[in-house]
Figure 1 (cartoon, rainbow, N blue to C red):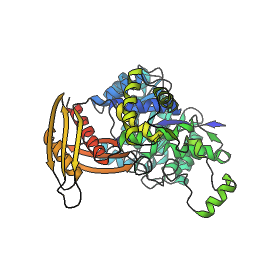
Figure 2: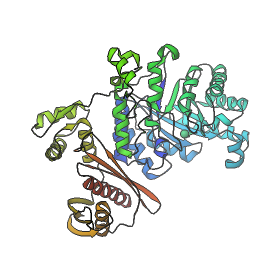
Figure 3: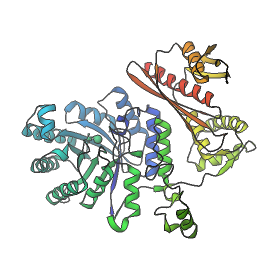
Figure 4: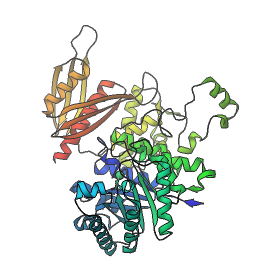
Length: 500
Ligand code: KIV
Ligand code: ZN
């Protein structure tokens, strides 16, 4: 059976989604999880884009093993050298370079002729090939490029040393039939001289369908992101394309190296890091993807699962949420649960998480896996802590002007402030804003229950804006006002760490 390579660009194209930027530690956690998931290539970033991007790609190249680490570069000498510097320490590395080929881009954006674009692409692939063995080239906006010219570019870059040619549907314009024919024409010309990759955007909701059509026509690599995040309407969703291949092997006659049991954990990790939730009816990883509501369906399922279930929840790593630990559970049980959940923590980290767990268990009778995952991610997000919440007392209710007294440590110094507001969260935020003297604006405030029940751990995600840059903060607690305060302070810490 053919193995389709999965090239994950969550940390590059995915990170280009509004509000999805990640700090270096978050990128490292995500990259390590992508290795567990079994992706063949991680596109770790665009090293020339900023010093932060360069540092992130370099750290991933040094710390994350078991997969190819790729860095993106425009077809420009300085980009290619920077990408090489960033990825070269990875045991397996790739330079991914690109140049537009459509007349629309060449005429209006780059103001170069087709001949010049071809010449630059070839020269830059040659330069990249003089530095690294594994080179990928993308003719950007390929799906709006005249086919004979596209094929000419593809052939020329293969001759210059590209071992993968990626055909991007940059603006999400193509259709499955049209794209399938385009990939077939390229495959018939180049044979097995290079791997054909596809990179589809989802502007018309066709990214997965277009990628699958390309696989049928001979593409050997799919570029995708977890939860389908990415520029504008996003990229091809990894979990959807992988589960299509897994579920319909009979039709596609192809498979991947993905350990599908890691899908849900990877999807949730990304959600926790970025604060960007997937819609409940999203295929594969949405909250309702395996929930059967209709009586007729439930009746069928009770008789035989196959009646209405084409995939098993456990295939993507979804378990019935189990009741696992409570306030009487000890360190040993807690530690082994952490290991089962895939967390490999140092003894002092386990100790610190255990203290938090006990505190949570005092507030909440039943501790679910999701509670533990939230607690651990919150504890080890590794953002430098300038502002810390120490205590919070709120007075609110009908006919009462809400008032909040917040105690914080700011750079190690204890401070306290009381403020009034339109509601308890507003009063709390006013107190925090007063003490931290923040100049940020609150753009978004979202609340979500992590587990069921009135004692559920509530999660709050806020987006702040300062000097044109956004920062997302998350906080979880059984008390939603405390969760809101934690989320606000988390975002303020992110802004402070940027200033540093
Ligand atoms: O969408 C696109 O064309 C890209 C390229 C850089 C591959 O992201
Ligand atoms: Zn893209």
